[in-house]
Length: 200
Image 1 (cartoon, rainbow, N blue to C red):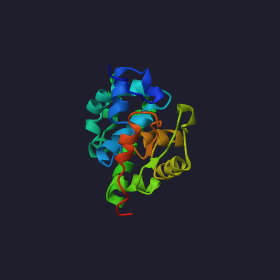
Image 2 (cartoon, rainbow, N blue to C red):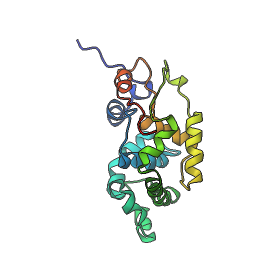
Image 3 (cartoon, rainbow, N blue to C red):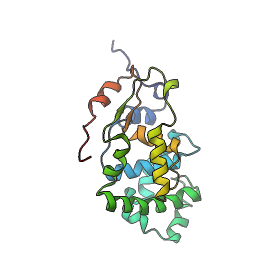
Image 4 (cartoon, helix red, strand yellow):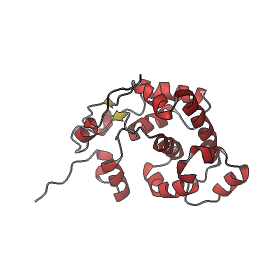
């Protein structure tokens, strides 16, 4: 009889979407600008809601927001924003929807300044994922000095919905930190995916 996989506590009794996300994506180091932008928007959209809610709407977000093409989103008109606010497949919060257009514009500025958003965002962990060794979910922080610094810099650059807690959730999602508990079957796998710092 196959022994069941041991997962992080938050995913152990979750729904199929959450389990799939935990098993395939969460904590995997991401270096792709489009995906990094997608997670930045989705984590901001999650504020005050559960991540499960956002996962259920993820396909809807991709469809509504031009597959997270920052160039296209930066050119959205006010009329387009109003249409999005009628779309049941996304979180219909005016501030969050308008923040997506704002953040797309700032994202493009960072790409121009640093060559890529990837090169900018990974600086906050010196280019390499932080490997934590948590035994239980209770040990996992909601923010760190790194997420504080990221939040402060993003806000200074004009980004919205980038508080330190959102930034830390973002760091977890894109693999800037490995917050799988050490007994989770994904911990070692994700740890081995870490790349050394480059061009820093």
